Image (tube, rainbow, N blue to C red; front, side, top):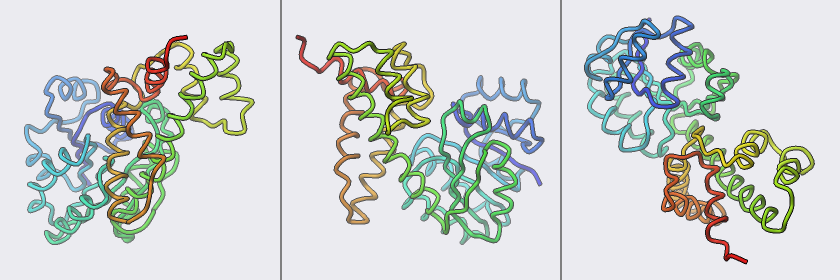
Length: 289
């Protein structure tokens, strides 16, 4: 079985590295030639000059792309080539779009799985991602056998789109939670508390402590906004949630407010920075005393 991967971004590069080390990656493609050349040189896999070439030479195709537009522009033209092949899309995109693409691939004689991940680039390097899978149950074992090389858990969530809905549940909570963590941290600092003591509350003493605060509190202390998960990606995910909520006719007031705060962070220049940089919204927009 030949496996190809499209998309060597922050997450895709590291996922591809884990697969290559496990002997489960044959070929890669990225539109940024330098990035692709670096990967090929480091991990001794083949490269494709086009996505079409990669699909034609692969039995299983993995995509890890930025957003709806990227996935649609890459996957839709490839659907006629998918007979007898499996597409595993690990991107976080709209479930509605993913279901539509899955139907087109099914009509061409192939299968598609949505397999978004929970975890940052650090989790990829530690092989501690959680992969949430939606798609036909009968070939889940193929997805599992590949995804396990970069994850601590690979969970079947149901039919096409269910992996993505599950990921959005996580990111609705995560985006809202980090906004609240940043607000609480800034509140404590402005009150005169020692920032180290605030971090201790967030990571050790609070009943609301979590692995996320353990990961992000040190970044708050150091004002370290090096990217584990970019602000622009959290904004994108919350926008997807807002659209899907309209389709489902459910209210999402808390995540809708969080979205506006991340948009403010982007307006302040933190689009590419880690999403904990949302704390700068609270710092900069709080009136000076």
